[in-house]
Image (cartoon, one colour):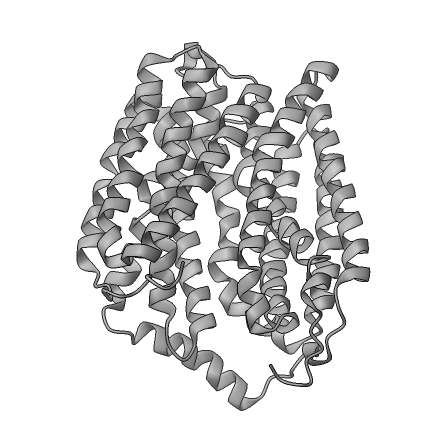
Length: 427
């Protein structure tokens, strides 16, 4: 570690690493899940929900393009704290605009602000983490980062959706219930900004570096070298198609679970949704991811890719079975969702490890960021059209289409080449 970097000891890192990555997860879950449930409660159509809540993935798609700005201007510590205050204000604005007659337009504009702020916050937080901790502490806290990010998923998809349901039952008004939820989030991020202003360490090497011809050349060289990698066309195809079926289903799962049975849904309440999909489902997702990581660490990515591909995609048929049977038992529904989410978490691990393999080389950090951009694009584009398809054909036929959409993933996997040894030491 360079001597000029004043890194805190492991004990001090516990004061900020968990809270920082919990804060990184909350805006993400707001964009991907919480906004979907809110708009569904406010009687927005499935087509509009899927299209307009998928579009704000764009900042995560293109964030590698402005990541150098975070490096060149200001301290990462300043970016983190400032953006947490900005996100706090944005959450408060959502709460204030929800009662407006034209709330949908206003809230969408604010969600774009949250998305850009969150994507930039991710850049600053990850960069600060690399500067503040020596390499051996970075490795030790990887699991802490991941766990706290996923705890944010449980808190958002589970706890806040459940709480919104309780508030809806108390107030009788979805607008008022969700206004309280976003005021709570605004307060949470206000406190987070104040807390991190005090707890994030001051780093000598955290100053902004003004752009130079050499720095600009390195930036564009990272992009050039990524697209010059052998087999990059097959790799990008894989990154875009591996999650195609899940991307189609993602924006419609919660509307499907909430819609009344007469419309083909399962008629769950917010409280039931929070328990079955937000808590049970996310725990199953995490368990599948941990098990997938363990197997890859033992056997390598090349050996495990196809088994994980199959396990990820076969359970997608559970959505079709639920649409056909429309069970009333929350235990049956929760169990079915747990199986599907376990399979998704298990198979998604292979995708993440493949991105690590593609990123290997001189510009590892930049190349991994480019991979995550393609990952976000692969979710954004199918999700934008999913709602229109569902409204035209109904839930049963939509989930049949989702099952058919698993086939391109197998085609894309057949095109890529994998180092036989890669992954065995990553776990």
